[in-house]
Length: 153
Image 1 (cartoon, rainbow, N blue to C red):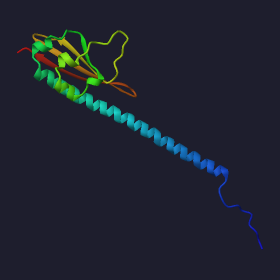
Image 2 (image 1 turned 120 degrees about the vertical axis):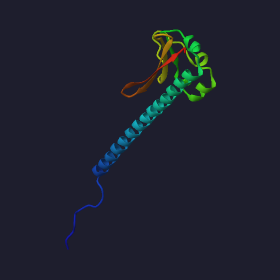
Image 3 (image 1 turned 135 degrees about the horizontal axis):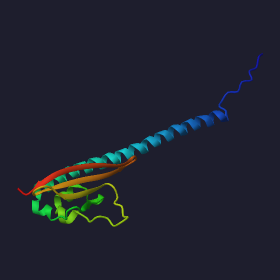
Image 4 (image 1 turned 180 degrees about the vertical axis):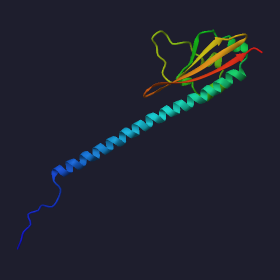
């Protein structure tokens, strides 16, 4: 009778190779998930700032008079910090007196996203308002800009 010397079962090298392949696949899946959550947070900040800038523009244009906006100092930047960028704050408070904060001190950096407001005196009795939102992403800072004029007509 002929006897077979072949062994059945897995060797240690086969098990280690399969575990290595499994670990590589799991690592790739985790990196993809982390990138997804980072991109999701960036898109939420982008949407929030875009809606906030549009609402802020409408609010400044429709709810405040030329004299109210003219009371802001010219050629000086004002800021809306991250914690105040929401629609409820904009609707419930007096924007000019409650939400605006002074520029940060020398060397101090505001946490992104934040909104910068700059008033420039234009020709005649017009004020040019520049609204800029700064949003942080992996490749740097994304900037959203809106400009509009407010006049004393």
